[in-house]
Every structure is written in structure tokens, then in C-alpha cells.
Image (tube, rainbow, N blue to C red; front, side, top):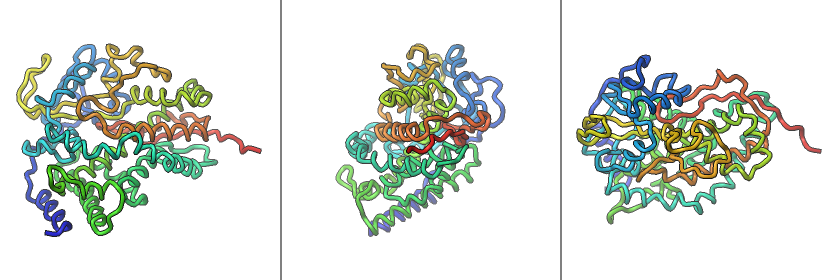
Length: 429
């Protein structure tokens, strides 16, 4: 069978004939008691989850819900860390808490390896990707990233009010990951739709959600075909040619990993950039200090990642277990809230404050355990570069209307709209 046919047949089998797993109706509506009925999809969670998490940490550190077919929410650092490291009792085969549980036999590979993979497969799948995300490899991306940031600000020059999320932050990781994967950069608007379908569309009826996610897989399959016809030096061709255990990767492995790289490489980073600009827009002292002391920016970026960590990951309980006072049932969800862990006063001094010169900062923004983000060097480079260029070109800015800032709901939290009032510096002599 030709390589092209191999991808088509594998994709068709999995989409049309493969097992669909377990579906559960999502119960929507206001939350009356976050300890017994939490939902990370509600507007008050999206707007400001930290008071909710602080309250739970004090009175019910592991909250429960019957929504999504049953789930748990630990809010202490030590509990989040313990579950993240415990791969014997908790599976990563599904990392987005929704009304759909993939079948158990999807483990240990999962749908988007390696983030969806359990040991021992996880180690080998992750190892394949490491060379592309080393500090040395990421450094090669920085000049183009910096030039692109400047071009975005050039396009905004002279506007009194700009949307720093839609017109700046969201473009940067789209361009970087498109270049790495060898996808056309003009397809960026489609990537935004894919993010919304996969991350924010979990409250849709299962049939509609599957249809929307299929659009993403159709797109990636078309890119795979294009790379099969025209191989080049990029991550997509690398994955197509890669071998594991002496044979080519399964087509589902290739496409699933492309899903991971595309979605995780975009939404998490643009959320971190946007949240950082939001903080600096409303915190004059921090903004002015970073403009005056640009050398502090790498340290400040780590603190902004801690304070506004965008990512929460899910796990599935493998078998019934009594865990730290909670009677968890097989197939229950667990939401690993790294943002909550990063605000735990038992782990961080002045945990609820943003301390931009914090020296010791072992935060969990990139996750904990075997699934710690393999793209952390890339995300750090993009965040630091985006902030350096912005502060260098736009040293004075503020929130145009705090009530107009809209935050995404779900497991990736960041500003989707961020109207900023800009005071442009006069041109030089």
C-alpha cells in the first residue's frame, strides 16, 4: 500500500468504524456550591477563578461534581503534584474534560501522543519530539519571531485603542507553529477556529462536537498529503518519516501529534502573552519597572506564568480508589488545576500577589510529572520576545475598559479580547 493510501485508510477506519467511547450529558447552569457541583465552564470561573480556588483550598481541597459524568478538582499544590506523578492510578488517555470519554483500549497511546499517552509508550513518543524543542533549536526561531512581533506593532501604529489579544498575542504562536510544521501562515484564521472547536466546544452535543473536531483532522490530513507529495525540512515531514520500534509511525500517531503541536502550541502561549499584557496594563508600577529595567523581564515572565498559568489538564481514574478522603470511581475525571497549585500559599510566599522580581519560582505553569510541557523553551521564548518588543515599542498603555476584557472558558484561560489604550511615543528626530 502506498504511503498516501496508508494514511487515508487508517483515518477512515478510525473516524467511521472505530469505537466511540462513553458519552455523558453535561449539566449546565449556575453553580450553587463549588465544592459539590463545580464547573470550569461557567462565566464566573472564566472571569476570575482565583477566589473560587482559594475558598475551595481552605474548606474542601478536593471538590467534586456530577457534571461531565463525574469529576474531581484538587486545589492544593501537593495534591495536584501527587496525581500528576501517579501514572499507576490515573490515566492521560483523555486530557480534555468533556461529555466524551474515549475507550479504554486507546491507552497507552491515546489520541494525541505523547500528551495522551501512558507509560511505557509515553517515554518513547515524547523522545521523538525532544530534538525540535531544545533551547538550541528554539533559539533559531527567535529572530523571525522578533521580526514578526515588530511587524504586528507596525500594523497597529497610530491607533488609540487596539485589541492586544486578537491583533497581537494571538498571531504570534500561530505564525511560529505554522513555520515549524510547514503549514501556510495565511491559514491562521482556521487555526483559531480549531482551537475554539477543540478546547471551548466541549459543551456541545457529542455529534456536533465530533463533527467540528473532524474539521481539524480533515485539515491535518490534507497537510500530511501535501507533505507526502512535497517533503521538506519541517516537523510534519519529520513525523511522517520518523520510526518507532523499527517501523514508521502509525498515521493516527502522526495526525494526533500534529493536533497536539498545533493546538497546544497556539492557545496556551497566546493566553500567556495576553494575560501578561493585561496585568501590565492594569499595574502601572510593574509596567514602568520593566520598561526601565528590561533585564528583569525573564524573571518577570516566570512570575507572570505562575500567577496567570493558562493550563489545566485532565486525567481519568483507572480503577475505583479512595484517595486522600475522596472516593473516586473508575472513569471519573480529575482536573489538574496548575493555576490553583500556583496560588497555594503552602507552596509560594505571597502566593496571591504578582512579585515580578521573585527569585525562587518553581511554578507548575508547564505542568508536573512525565507530561511536563515539552515545548516550555519555545513558550518562554515567545512570551519573552512578545513582551520585549511590545514594551520597547509601546511603553505606555492601559486598559481601555476593564469590563470589556473577555476571558476564555474551559481548561485554557486567557483573554480573548483585550482592548488597550495606547499612548504612542513621538517619532525620534
